Image (cartoon, rainbow, N blue to C red; front, side, top):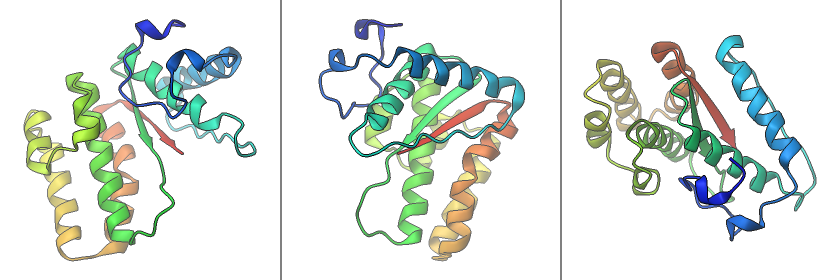
Length: 177
């Protein structure tokens, strides 16, 4: 999956022209091997550290695109870019949670427009086939948001990937940039 024409660009890369992505074959192989190990070893964490402008974002965005394109039902990618803007904990929780569910639904339905359009919670329930797990999960999150309980909302949002992984026997690769 080296040629960009084969890839599904479910995420707009910050690098610009996809053909400009080059020279990271060993790094991508390492990430792909790591993602395969998550199927059998459960939770594995990995951090990538480097100085600014060394290509971390380009690398993880391409990793996301490859995982999305591969469509392995056991490995679902989630990419979240932390923006440098002031945001309340409640706003962050809602954005993180809705982004995770939108990308999960996009992966399952293969509809990449869901990544940028961010469907409502009711639309997500429908997209996820009225699954009782998601109905209950979304209901809980909505309650925390309505009560403005920012601590509970953030705790709930930040563990959503883990809950889904356990419930659905899938691995959600959370890429935080």
